[in-house]
Image 1: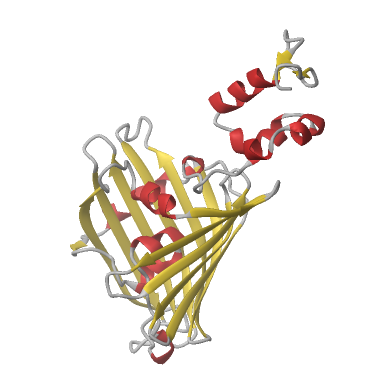
Image 2: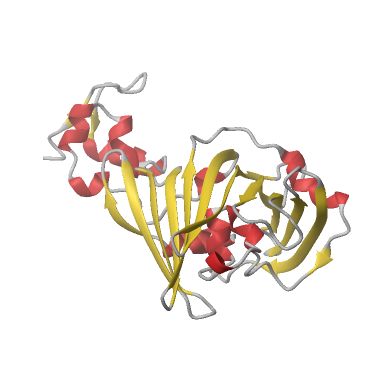
Amino acid sequence: WIKQFHYRAGSPAGCTEMTLTDVCKLLWLQGIFAVAGQHMSSKVAMLLPLQLLAAPEHPEVSGYLGKTLQQRMTHRAGGRLIGSSHGQLACDYGSLEAPLHLRASFQGTLSLENARPNGALSLDIVWIGWNNFVTNKVDRYLIVTEYDKDRTTLSERCTTYPDVNPKGYHDPLQLMAARYRLKNYSADSAEYEYSWRLQNGAEMSSSMVADSSGFPPLTIDIVSRSGSSQSEYNFTYASPSHEVDSAVFYKYKNYNCTIVANFTNSPEVCVDSWLAIEYECDFAQAAAETFV
């Protein structure tokens, strides 16, 4: 029936008739197979075999380039609210500024339910990643400013560490996305599941609901379990904007950053879902602590 069916509706200028096979080839070349129904008339989409309309097996990560995503997060442990944050994740290709780099940043504010021992109740957080996709070397920076209840600055620090990309990948985001597996999908959304055993033995699982094309994410939940304790991060996202503030990528230059081993188990990086997975944010005991 594919050979007999002809797609005429909405044909590009100069085209009067296309077979469905040709349409499928064009969709594949444009990288939009998962959203074929959006680029065809509804009648054609209804006739397509179900497997042609399936969402991608993994979340789409290339969609992050050149965009900024506003997001909100709440963190609970043992059923108790620990903190909440709002901020934005941005990714871009360095272009003429940095032609060999992919760059990513998170910038936002974390509000705590209980003050830290030094009286800190809110934190401004900036995370920056510079990824040289030729050498596969990655530099990451974490800038944290602590404030008391009156927003008086208590401390300000910058830490950094050198790293390399995971073997076989041009960016850590690709590895983490590959661990997400498609669970369910519809014409409007796709649901992915993630499961991983952390270095400390805890079990981390995640559920992502995204657009049917795999990007952008709509909600992401991350749960870590260690014995009878449980920690949960819940993220919600607004529609992405096609603008990136490149000045954020250079904020580390205002500091004399201290070199550390990595950011694993640093609660400040858990304000973004991808960072929470990358740095294995397991704070199942946080309900009894005040530093998170």
